[in-house]
Image (cartoon, rainbow, N blue to C red; front, side, top):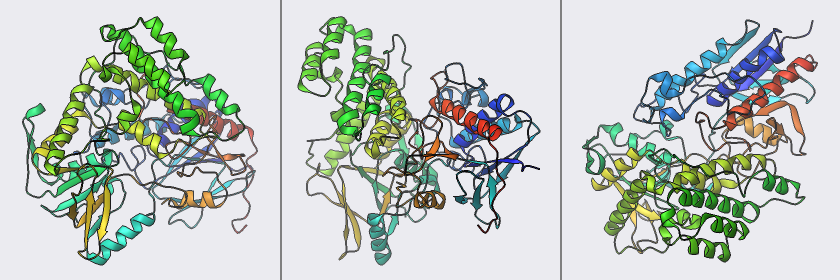
Length: 601
């Protein structure tokens, strides 16, 4: 009698839930009523997983509006399997679609989606939840895999394993170990990169200065938990918003590479004519790159195409919606822009002749370095300068007169789709993902209004860009400074790294991935599992796809550009889930799943 077929999914958060939904949708066609065991391995609740678990502060918000979050396919998604529509978060929870839900609300939605997908499986499928951590996968390429679990004496036997582990922890690198050692010697506080909701913030005392390195979404969470989370409150609204301290807050001195927060979420709907994308970075261009025999370099080979593509989105919207701010006929500009090589004097001249106001031109380098060349006479002047910058950003991102910004956002999503096709050959690196997040995944506008109120109240103080963090052995303090205020240094007994961990192959905090890397699984320098972009099979160092191991999600080279999918936008992640689910079911149906070798082998 042949063994009962078994599929192990490591990671039961949103991506694991999405894969389970596609498994249930495709199973009747591809697998029928044969028995199947599905094992879900995750120490956190199935559905929300770690990041969206319901047992966290309701002060923490999603970074998407309720109407922009769905876990269900629609007719815009490229699928071989059936479309199984379902409600958005807003529809399911009865929320105003334009609000930013709390993370516990999203967690409740994800739990419901998981239960719906689980209940859609036929009685022949048994789902087993294992609230623990997977430590290692072993087994021959042509035989059943063994998945060792923390706290379990006997491994799970699997005909196929699918990794949907999401964002991962990392061990401290050399700099973080040095800072931690310094803090321990001088009885200081050092919080290394971590998911802010999981960090122990109780060690940060009220009224004391805290140096914060990082100005992205992790900082926003930190800001919330150390202000409202300690009993502070806001009064008024809009530009009149005032923060009323509880007296329990530390003083947060924040700086980063750019020295400014991520751009605000766009506060209007892009209507009218949309830019036809892709244009300069589409299938034709990625096919040409993939045909090359040598390495593909992101900065040399890809970034110029992205720059021109985003410019195309920007100027198409400007000419179609605000022609009074242009000086050429669209057809003339289109031809000149088309003929000009990317990122050079020629294309700059074309744009300057067609768009009189420099504020209407797209300059990605200037966007990436907004404070380059600026100097302030004092730290107080810097505070006002940064408040002005954030106020201007809020105004612009909520004014449809600047709708080319929203067109660039659409261009960024298109670009991400093409980068997925280059996944096996190219890792864009941390800079690209940071730049994408800075432009496209910033905080909701209300969060930046809160930041301004906290700045006016003196609870948050800006350090500037390019910050340097030093240790003073003689005085036993951390200190930080920025070139925008020459000679000014801020001292503190606490340092917080407000960013998520960087799980490179050398420093990954996942014993499962560390073991895979050691045994020959291919990875990028940034710690992403290299997968076949077609079906998500994990590649080994010799380039061969493993027939029994798949991976989906942000820990892979097939990562998508956003955490969740907007309705009716093509749902790249949904398409990936569908392809992988169908490949898994076909394998389970057609291949002889051999009996396992003895466990001692």
